[in-house]
Length: 192
Image (tube, rainbow, N blue to C red):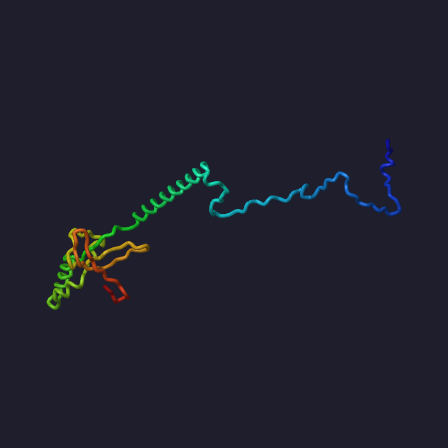
């Protein structure tokens, strides 16, 4: 048993002491990594991107069936998306119609000019110029079939906008027409 006076007195000598370090006898070295390991890196955060691929044997039946199922689902989604976009395009586009410069317009232009001095102009010069009144609707349906040498206004839906072409009927067939179209080269020049 020890007394309290033994504990309180330090054991200090006046001469310096050399302490030599020797390896421990147990043989186990404890590194700082064992006590506190490096933190694990979290996976990098990406925005979207493709699905990460796995190393698999693609010919095995369960994996093959899973891949086929995924491909079918993708095809169905793509088909649904295309149907939606087609419906939107069909709803947005006006119907393609052809308008004829018919005798109605020629008569209208002749009657308008007859009010003023109609004796000065011949019928031939009046048939080449067309006057369309504002009361006529733009998408008016024409019930008669186009005849030879009739002028047509044809609307085509382009990728970005609606294009209109003026054409002259060259031949009339049972199932269609042969039309020669006029193309604009510059502001005031046209080409057949």
